[in-house]
Image (cartoon, rainbow, N blue to C red; front, side):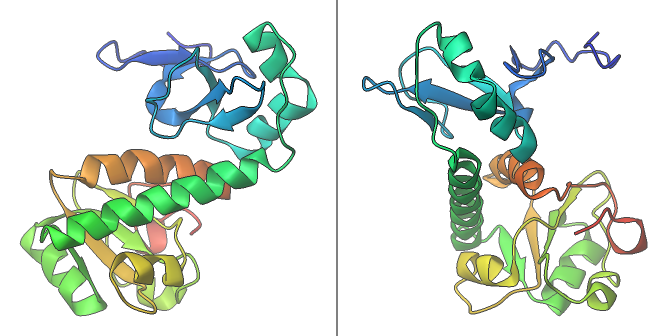
Length: 209
């Protein structure tokens, strides 16, 4: 079990957060590496060489790692972490989520607009419901999270619009497979940075968007 008392899913790769000490699936963590110059920076694609340092995808926890010098402790060397590192992580994750949604749209696995999204939900085609954080709560409450799917409210209307090639989008949906799993994983991390959490319900039952 984890320190929080939850049963581990042994099928998922796990890492230890250098701040909290909790061992959890790496999908909920951000990987950081150190450059040859001793600068800490996020490795959001988790592909860069070097010993990774993992931190829970939460703005306050990343800030604590900087303030307490925990990156240096984990690296066993004096390293430098910029004070705006949480901002860099947030911006990078937002770009990645937008890019993944855009690719899913081009592959025919994503739609935008209230009526199209409602249609996908009614037909069981949608597996992820995306709603703009700055959209009307009344309008968002008329849609629902796909059964067995996910809901996210971590992107703004302009960010969702960018993903769908429009100025602004309030409602979007992704089908199963393809890039949807990538969107879910990275949107969950972005939610942690923005303090919006992907829930299991939309509308009245959704967590704060």
